[in-house]
Amino acid sequence: MDAVSAEVYDVVGIGFGPSNLSLAVALEELGQVRSEQPISAVFFERQESFGWHRNMLLPSTTMQISFLKDLATFRNPTSKYSFVSYLHSAGRLARFVNNQDFFPTRKEFHQYLEWVASNFRDQVNFAHEVVSVRPAAGATGPMDHLEVEVRRLSDRSVRVVRTRNVVVSTGLAARMPDGIARGERVWHSSEFLTRFATADQASLKSVAVVGAGQSAAEITRFFHDSLPHAQVYAVIPSYGYALADDTPFANQVFDPTAVDDYYFGTDTTRQAFWDYHKNTNYSVVDDDVIRDLYRRTYEEDVHGTSRLRFLNLTRVSAVEPAGARTRVSLTHGDIKELDVDACVFATGYHAMDPAGLLGDFDEQFLRDARGAHQVARDYRLVAATPNTPGRVYLQGGTEHTHGLTSSLLSNLAVRSGEIADSILGFRLIEEELELPAAEPETVGNLG
Ligand SMILES: Cc1cc2nc3c(=O)[nH]c(=O)nc-3n(C[C@H](O)[C@H](O)[C@H](O)COP(=O)(O)OP(=O)(O)OC[C@H]3O[C@@H](n4cnc5c(N)ncnc54)[C@H](O)[C@@H]3O)c2cc1C
Image 1 (cartoon, protein in one colour):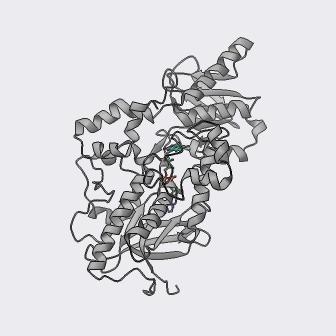
Image 2: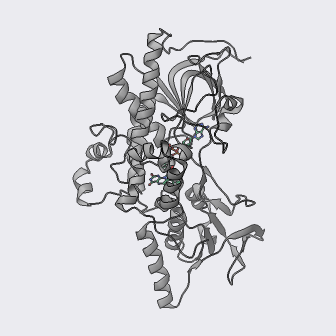
Image 3: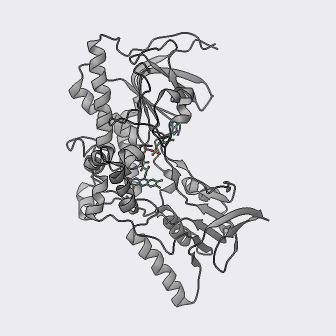
């Protein structure tokens, strides 16, 4: 193999979704204030271009947070990367305000994210997947480098970069019910629009959507609109969709200050966040979507049709091929089996877990009594010894330490600012110690 250049950066970001995009913004804005030398950051993203849950950008779906909870405003209300700044540059500020609505469509928010991302093109390597993070050869102390191994997806070539700061932000992982595998006609919501676009839509005469959360309700509505010839089943484990609580007192669980209340709280107070306020985000649906679906089924009753059917208190126990269709076995109710042309599982996601990327290096980080990673307030994995090389920060996967905002957009601006602050703080120590600044160097041959 040819000699491989191991580049050195102050920060290596894994994944370039909204979290690390917001970090890029924070590093630029805080770096200008706090550091004499520019901060060098590089991000690796396996998608071919910027994309935020593209497969769920269904028509008319709206954000579940205020537009003011953008990538920067809560940390820096004068940021040039705010949503308001984007609206201004797009020539839509006045018209957006005329809407008198805090919740833009997801499509518009996606355009905003792409607009911000276009400013950081030179820092991002798209179609590059990070495969591992490990201490650099010979690393023995906290100021030594980590090596991040990256694969370019076009030709599978491998590249190694070095850094003292890795920020893992690889997002949620799709969750299917135990024993049920995805297939040609069995989809997870995270792949929905791609699957739908490539399916022969005329052949989708009967479809099922499994789940009781926002994505399930949105896909049910979408099927009902897009397949006027089809029977649409919504298989829901509850008695009906439950309402997402976004009333003001409850919404405080997403405030930046709630992170401290959670982090420094007792086990009892932390548990209270989940017991009382899980319904702000998990397995719940926005009011307008619930009412819209109910109205549709009522209208059908009035007209004596039932193209849209809700099977409540029902779970799927198995799916299996049945000729060209898929047989869905159900656990409750009059209908025990459905033969459908597509079954979509909107059954949620697993939290982000950095263990796979860290491999053996993961053993150098502490875990709590329940086996979860210990995470410092600045989102750094807690090292088992003071000599563990480098620092690994998490954007996601910290529900157990930092609370409900861990996988959401609500606190991105502030969280990214806190991570950037921490990195810049360590950078000052490195400068005091006169450690060499990050500059590309060639370190030899990978064999
Ligand atoms: C349909 C949907 C709608 C949502 N709407 C909202 C909302 O309105 N409000 C809200 O607060 N939250 C919402 N969420 C929650 C969601 O988690 C956040 O919106 C947001 O995506 C978090 O950003 P992220 O950058 O942490 O993760 P992601 O957006 O998932 O980005 C992670 C990125 O990392 C990349 N990646 C993964 N592994 C690697 C690797 N090994 N190497 C390189 N790249 C990698 C992925 O390709 C991906 O682009 C929604 C979630 C879904 C599924």
